[in-house]
Length: 211
Image (cartoon, rainbow, N blue to C red; front, side, top):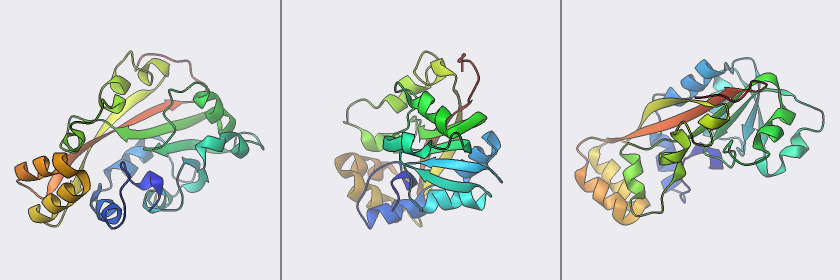
């Protein structure tokens, strides 16, 4: 299972069960296409091996090439080559010193940066109850936060984790997320969990401004 296919790291077969349940409606790739576009474009896919998420981008008509963000410079030797950079739940956070400069070495001027991360305020965020505070659930989406203060805007996509039955959903979250998962499972009345993702997006070559 590709790292960038899923928002959490799980062992098989749990990872495959989540992959089958995550955004079955295809809202995330459709939103990426609307914010891109990606169709008939050269796309740098950050930290992803060929997998389900990359396949969805290819289905849009994108020409996808994987980029290891820890070695971004190696992908820029021939100058900017991509029309867009897409990152899903990966090491690219757009907030670390040098990230935008590295993106500019890969993405042509006027190209798009599209960064998918969790947003919170949903059922899925309750699965992380008791963990340390997650910046994607608050700081990153604020106007004074590191994304919006650095030229990104944000689109929130309302998705689901959809299972075959309530019992299947309860079994999965209980097994995958321990005590917090069992608490969520006990309250489930439908075979799906609400899941919101934030797509932070900006055009390279534009000045930072308010989101």
